[in-house]
Length: 367
Ligand SMILES: [Mg+2]
Image (cartoon, rainbow, N blue to C red; front, side, top):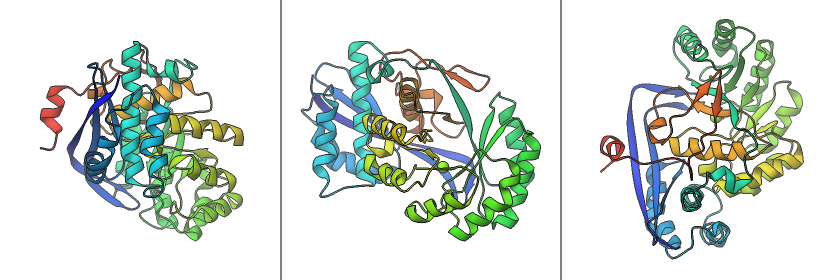
């Protein structure tokens, strides 16, 4: 079997209201999706997460052509050609996201061709139910709106939720953390995501002030480039630190681990280099004793890939599940996802179990 074409789709969903994080807001969600075609008629879907329009251009100008003629079963060969042999040009960034999309699609093709789910290609089924956490509660001008969102989410059965704060100083944003904890009670786990918006000093102050609210983790408190400062922060505070959604490849995570910068690693399959690279990161993290909760905040294709990875990888915890209803999400899954009591049942459809239906393309594809 060989790859004969790589089609690229840009899907876009206009939001009814803006979503705010520490670094600003966004009012549109974009997903760049590849459909990889083969000479045997089997096709596969994958996606790259980041600057969608830039990733689309890289796929069309470079990565698509590099993939033509390769056997989608030979994933290590594909990774070598798309990522390792491009290292003089691209070490991190959108090119790696583009390569991740094609790599993901090859797993989908392989699973479909062999008529088995992708988790069976990875390591076999380790867990058939995965605990999910609700992502995300966005920063709101009125803290009471965040509280309403939190109550809506836990009424769906989620026992762990994540909220974005950090648009204001730690002293001012404490009212948001406080109202969230009060509205969900002490039995629900609460994570706070700062999206790299604080300085070391602010993050330290936040950790001191907010520790009383029993946070499960503090996510990306600092700019992702400040690994030494993150490590120093972690040594001085008691709240666990999660980070990694803006890191690339195994090498990026090795630095985070070597420097003792994280308690929880968050690689994104659609950014780090694909499913195999994420599996390698999980293995490396295991050797360091660090659990992995993959970053998973895009379309239903990344959702499916993340479920297959977690289903087959022991050193993973908590599936990130987008409850905002703003992404092009469950519409892409062939089997509707079963979520009960905050646990997702792993689907057993061959490949990734996703499809790009015609009606979805008509509704969302950017012409
Ligand atoms: Mg995050």
